[in-house]
Length: 136
Image 1 (cartoon, rainbow, N blue to C red):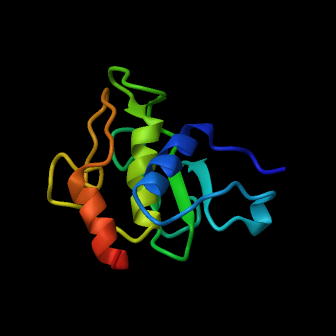
Image 2 (cartoon, rainbow, N blue to C red):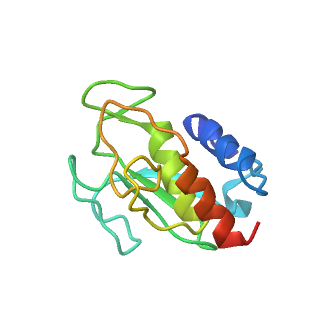
């Protein structure tokens, strides 16, 4: 049985409500298009994590479907001082899964860094970017 990424669900819903994409949970890992997990250090994808305080997560562009959180970071659900919100990071990484790169707009979820202790949502720049990418 596949495990549910409960802290990712609302991030997928947010992207779905602002795009033409729909998302559903796979019945098992073997038939999932997107696979989400926690990893530490060198975890076999060619992009090792650097421990706490560095890279928070990474995801690969379509159609790869891999999304990894760095298990050495301090994670939270919601805005907690000194921790990174799982949903905010998921929103950013799902943007990469959909094909978006980093934005130069600081308020955008696709900006290259996320501050600890905050939550963040989609910005008009993110929505414009995804619409431009898919001509919708």
